Length: 385
Image (cartoon, rainbow, N blue to C red; front, top):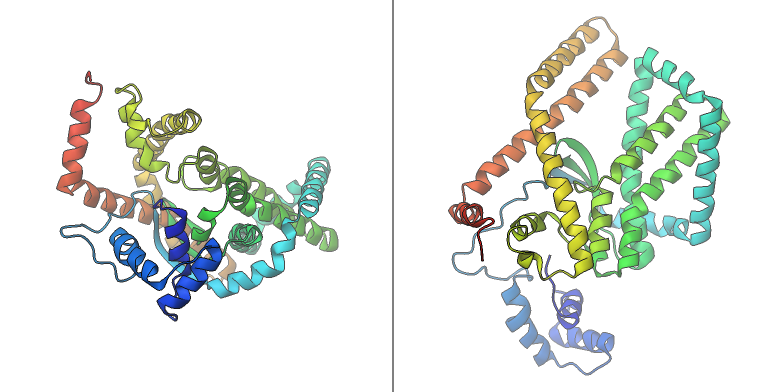
């Protein structure tokens, strides 16, 4: 994340390798409503953009190390839906963000949930799912579809606000598999539009739930109600602000701070320096970020400790389900084999995620410069200034 002047941002957005600097100057001048020469564009490119490293032919400074991978970042990720396909879908789905449509959808959700609570239909669906392995596989498959649809909601919200969404991909985030959407262009939007992008995913979860209720009304197929109930839990999970889920980005945009995790060390240092380490933040943003850090650090530490303590049981469970896959295949029970195979994947992904995080941590702490900085921070923590 880099903050530049509006002029440099607009110039970077206008650059196109298919056109010469005269064309760029003409387009830039039209957007800025002032005269811009090709020589001025060349000067800005050579003396501003290229030294910042934002161009594809920028030369890194001597001795500059490549940035270390984020400790809590996405891993083993790959694109699934190309950007052009995403833009085609968002063009069709953009009207779903018209305010009257949003209000009607939320009202329908409240009515549908009230009916579900009174009817007790979820119990029949759970009994069916737990007694038939094929239905459990069906529930998992629909949940994966809902995850991709969630990301399409973020992309559509971005398109509705005037930004261009990128591809939708899949990967491992921390300890579980996720879909993700490239929304880099949304960072130029105002705060309200960014918040709409943050909440666009859970809004599409709402629409997915309504589609499940409609499917149940047409077919009477109770496992659809199980998926609908599970989607409510997914929505609640997305609002957790402690890792990079939707709630994290809501807090980030409310505070106006792009990367909250990079603020952890300054906030902790500020506890012993009277707040000087985060003095660049406005009081409103400083309060939000400090509260987030003080809640997030102990929670993540406790979660990591819990996972480490339960690693033996997790590994044993993976081995047990793997053995069950072979037994089910030998007995010709393909649905049971598929369910146990999904269980193996679900349990193995946290192990893979933990291994990658451990490797990244070792790589990060093995950097002598980082080690020196952290040692200095520890030794000077709380010392009188």
